[in-house]
Image (tube, rainbow, N blue to C red):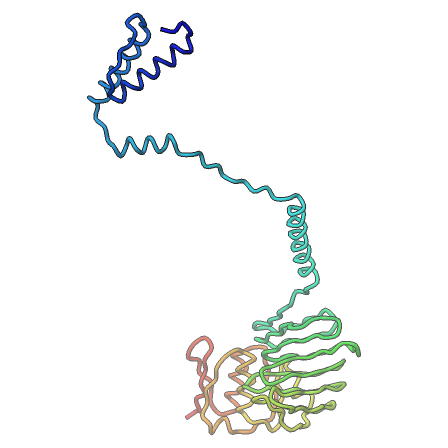
Length: 314
């Protein structure tokens, strides 16, 4: 055998490969290392042949061992992109705070079962009748708008640069500086002017009227009805807890009492068609109905917390 170790190793490797392919070969008898390698190979083959094997499992193991490693790609955002995102978030936060500061809080005033006097932000004064609500809907330097349900007496500060208006379901009242009363009970809006000038616009079309002091106009179903003259005490004495009327139909009086006390009153048409003149105290519901019942020749009987009906005396 060639004395060069590299040539010797190469020759032995070729002989082992030929034997693995089933060819007949002869190894040098004096090379103990080769015979030890052959014996080790035969022992490994013997163990493998006697072991239980799952071909699918073997192939899966081979596939896992030879499968290339998948690396997750990490995207690094450029620094200018991060700065832009941070600036955008700061801008949104600033704008939100700015809008909260600039948008005034709209107020709602409710009188419940008592007359309530309130002062608006511009110094104007409003007296709310019981069970009435006044809500701000627009508020800026040139325009103040309110919505009314129930009844209220207004004393508006004069300001030629600011429009003041009151809306109801039937229309709106526009003023610059004046004193007036608005009521919305009995499915109708009534506007009475004490001082100054107001324009009353209906909700339908171009229907409108301009009032002078001492005049009253009604709006119903979006239309402005003809102007009438009414005595002041018949309109605003509710603020003194009294109700005054001259030749007034009982149906209208009962409607006003229903709103003032937040109740329902039933009476025959023959009673409602009567015309009355006089004064009624409004400070106590039971006393008011007792006095009115005596005038009508009967009494108002209570059926639940807020319902009454008139019964004529026998």
